[in-house]
Length: 141
Image 1 (tube, helix red, strand yellow):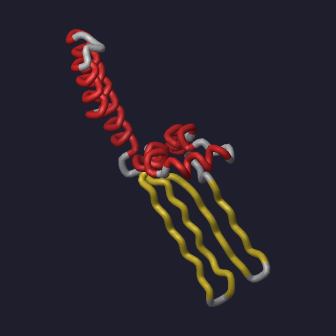
Image 2 (image 1 turned 90 degrees about the vertical axis):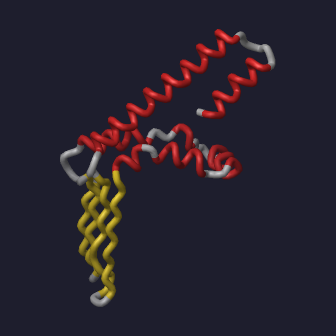
Image 3 (image 1 turned 135 degrees about the vertical axis):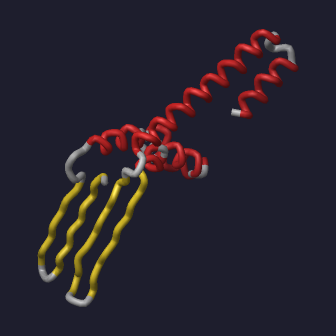
């Protein structure tokens, strides 16, 4: 946000816009930031306490147990696409894009919104084969 304000001030200083235009642009930036802040707070309130959980339990052999439990707050997962697109270096994003993967096009927030409304497990797998027993469960709690 500060970068945009600085840019407006530079345009005013260079005479590319009038003081009235600068004031309108700055007002727009402020109201946009306020709307985004309200939306983030509403999302956080709605998702408070809800978590995306991944549980993997079982054993490959009698003495080799596997127990993995991952819990990600939905409010954090909701903004993962923004975090991904800003944290992945440009050269890596370019390589991914060349392979058909566009991180900026991911809409993880929409997927999380869908998860939030689910009443059943997203994934539920039970495996009992050749001495290996495994249970994988992905759900929102």
